[in-house]
Image (cartoon, rainbow, N blue to C red; front, side, top):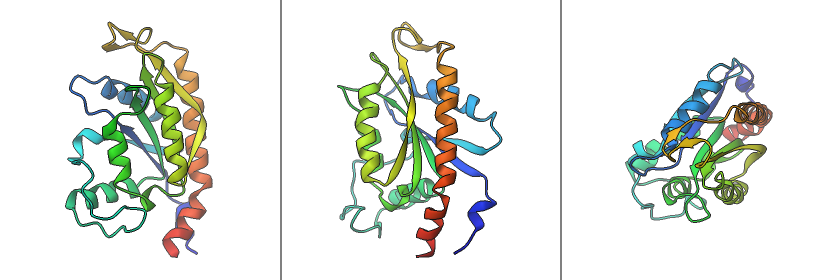
Length: 199
């Protein structure tokens, strides 16, 4: 088995889930990135679902059964997601759950998610906690190890007029703990990813 994973810096994607015009997700993702980019144990990149040109799921076979993708947008999305070792999902809460655009983007793929780690930054009237809880169920099916700590941002207290992002200082230690866990678990799962590539 190749040990190449030992010498590569862990790559973490910060996934912006909302595609709504005027969304708060871009500002939240920038905040996460600015904090994460100060670290030396991993590299971070913002991946915006709104910029992936993904239609409603249009592959003829479920990704869990057949990863021989027919659509060019799926192939590009597959390459993007497969290139990372872990993920930070930045998600709003819509109607007590995650937004449809993020779920649709997730459902395009299957094996590309395997043996990675994930953390969550939710935002909404109640901190996006129910969206994150639903995401945790999805992560289990995708063989993703989701970490315990999460950031819950309130539209009432962390956004001026629910639009201008001004996070309270107490969120920073939680974000740091979550990042620590995502990087550690991504590193710990590296041998399984290497084994999967060699199979």
